Length: 294
Image (tube, rainbow, N blue to C red; front, top):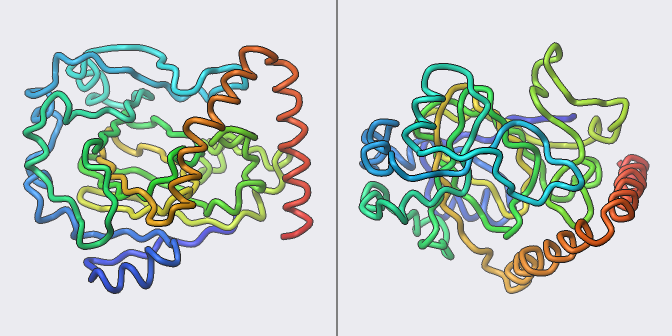
């Protein structure tokens, strides 16, 4: 892989953000965006447990889904309080994603401010909390709705690997899915890495970015950016989603949600082996072409 660090700024004006990052679709880490929010100091495990400790949540482990696994199928369920107690005390490869804590505790919305000065189109009904125990992994994918994301880390550190959408074939994208066939787990540690360059040689030519988020850091992740996240510590982050400004961008997101995903689900149920075999062939044909063009 050919990796560069993500740009980091302490603060940024709306004009510079638009010209340097939003318009050209380049990720950036903003260090100070969240430091004026009450959440910066208030949000911790005990604070959330007081509000939603009894709410049952879906948990996800580190096992990478296979060709027959329905998307977003939970691996276990616990109350939020039980989950926090489980991951606070050390490595625990369990995570929660797309948890709208604000449905259960709407008063928490008073703890942050929507950064409308940077971009428009925020989906303000759905701020989302993402939590994980140390060593938990969010495998390489892009977000199906193709929203722009501002992802703010509050507790713990998280290592993030990013690629522009155009690198999809070098990343061995599964057709009609948002997932990579390859496993990028511990990609940065040669002794622990599960990345198989012999099976997936095109990844060596993929051009991407990497960064580590700490308390208060906000990552701008442009629409359709591939991302792989590893929790170095038990922690949580909040994602604020903003729709693309262009009609084409919105339309592509709708297609992914209601067209692409529906076709994939139907084929997995009706002809799983045929569908799997076609995907496997297509993935490696696309990767070979991408290597020749690189």
